[in-house]
Length: 104
Image 1 (cartoon, rainbow, N blue to C red):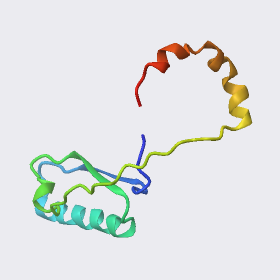
Image 2: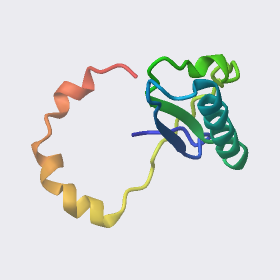
Image 3: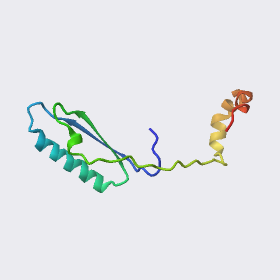
Image 4: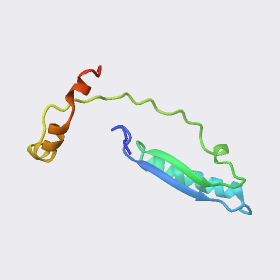
């Protein structure tokens, strides 16, 4: 999985709410737990997944718009010596003519 640098991690909360559970109380507790994690790890993405049965977490979760993160492109101008030795055969077997026609 690839994450932009601006997202420091991913908090995944898995949930099972039995059909006979007090959904209001369970959703309140779930919201408190998710909110506590988001307070500690502000830059982390948060996913809440699972079997909610008749409960609807969207009713208690705050409405959030996804953050737009600018894309950062980087070029590598230096290769490690060990990568040259590891990939030597790969470079020899590559059909470079195919790549010459690719527009950047």
